Image (tube, rainbow, N blue to C red; front, top):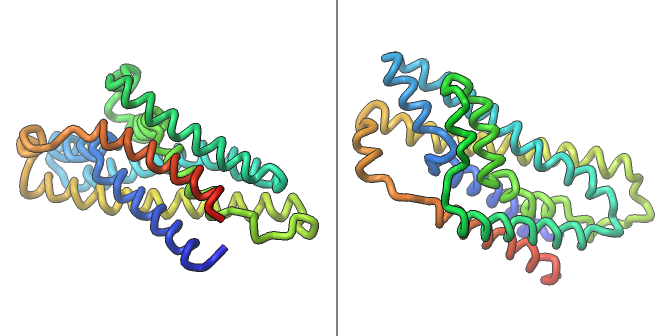
Length: 220
């Protein structure tokens, strides 16, 4: 795969993380409210760390199974198409069903890592990374006859870990920046009166990413 393509895919990992960071549905308002409730700024950092941990675990829960399946070199194209279709279907589902998962409201606010994990899974945040990850791990340029399955699998698991960490780091930096601005200068009242609903944008972005994943299979 060309270096420019690989670079573009890694930028997609970073930008998707930034996008998740901006989205309040990934939990940064909870970090702000935690800090305001306790009256100490350190609670902002603690909450952001817990949210990042939960998000990272959710990314790994989605990416690791695909990292194991990519060892099946002969079915690589079918796997990428299937992943793209899955992401598109998730986007369509979220467009049709605008209701937020009720079970998230039952999670205690102090369990931020668990809440972040469940929120990322429910909103398809991990699925958004799958087509990008599979593009990075594309085996088109590899000679399957000279690649040991275990070596390929280990390499893909390492890539999955790297993708998840880079994505989560980008999300935490951007989400943390937004939370910091809200906490120190604007306050939650500004958030409640000015923030727009991103549910439709989120669903459409899933459809776009999934469609691009399918297109990339046939484009080379």
